[in-house]
Length: 146
Image 1 (cartoon, rainbow, N blue to C red):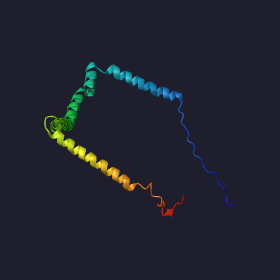
Image 2: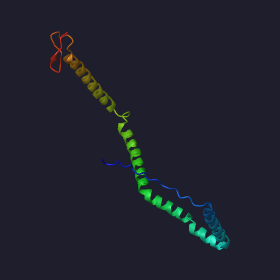
Image 3: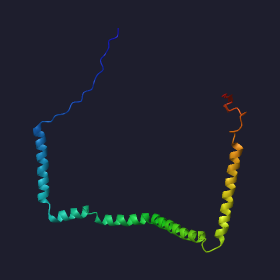
Image 4: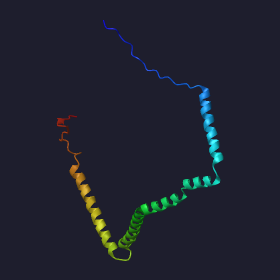
């Protein structure tokens, strides 16, 4: 017989440092910080402020952004101008109030409308099977009897 072994579970232990070690480290950090602030001169603070100043970078970034997006802005302006010009030209082209072409277009429209009216009534007569009593309906090849 084989012995069954229990699966081993890993337990992680949290390291607990003594409190006085943490207090000692925190005290040392605060003392060093106080010494740093006491030793630094106003000139050091101005030098640090100049190093961390990013106002010149902001204006440079704005200029680079404008240069980057300028082609896209020009394209959008060109498309907008194209649509405005094409709308103006289409209004001139489609304005038939001054010419006698309005009557010709009316004749064409009425002729096309009459054609569709006649063809729709003729197709309805052609496809109408309501009076055919001999017709046997079929669904998928199977005859349906009433």
